[in-house]
Length: 497
Image (cartoon, rainbow, N blue to C red):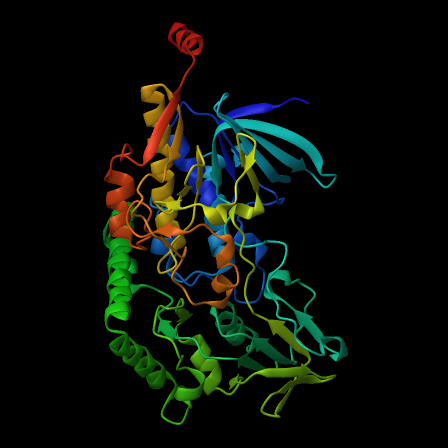
């Protein structure tokens, strides 16, 4: 079996993997890299999800890359526009030529003696076993299971004569025009589906167990569009980016420090949209504080417009059972339906469910501490891109890519081949990986690494602090151990070349 070797192996050709390719090319031009993608297309989330109305719930001035300005009028962009942005970025920088499709990474084993990973991969539909080696493994595979979304075990589904579909499994043959639709859920996917499907369906009911905070925001950023007309594209982009970053940080801090004031502000916005006759207390007032879970964004108030027009409605209740013609609730009410969409969440995975071993010993990531939100205690030369829960995904991923490049360049300068975060402070207390009450997080939290009670093990969910830590902080911080010098003969060969 021929084994290819690369300095860096990136797993995943979604928004994080494409960003990683750019940063490696720019900051580590002497390093070879490859991107292995398990599916047959790039784009990750933005290619996988095809349900009606698919869009970002973050503005594209912060979800877009720091190095490539977003130039479209809409700040809250739809899925096809985001996917096109990713395709253009990959093509313009030649990153697309580094991607190997149909390569599903299954296992990686680190050897300290060789200072390299051996990565086991299944290639193509035949799942042909192939191997790669690399000096650094960069996981950009996201945080959820692409094969299957989460659907609760609802009673009576076998009796239902209509169709039941999870948004992650949406296909082009699903026809909802003129039909009665029930969307189960109240999160970002549900509030996207309901107004879009309401344009064609006979009626759409959003059925939720409990409410979520919903915030309306203009689909276009007037300030950004004005700047773009008067300033160079990159200047306008970064000014808008920082405006949005700072406002997001301010509002998050307000929610944490003055939750009642934030709650009042959000609910007053809903009342202004829906009017005094709508039951805001029942359908839009959660039991938790703002930002204990992620807020739901509706561009131009499209969900509220669908509700006011009576094309959609909200029911807050629990499901007792599916029937032949719909869903019976615990209150005794029955909702008739031809199509049920279970917008009930994701199944989270650690590092794409990759099996990892270090010097022959399997790694249990739930027993590790997360270093700077990107690496893991006692696991060498491995980083993962994971975005913010309270801001745009790409903000953190950009910084993570920069930091990986700093580590690679430091090792090259010092002639050391291994960087390993070491848990050497006995006063560090373990804390949950994410302080989030959302069901999809709580269901899987026991599988994930812990965070520590202080830096660099603490996840601050703060872009400004992460800039200080990842872009400006020392890589030799007393926690990251740089070891494993090149063998003397290898160093001499390098000098001779």
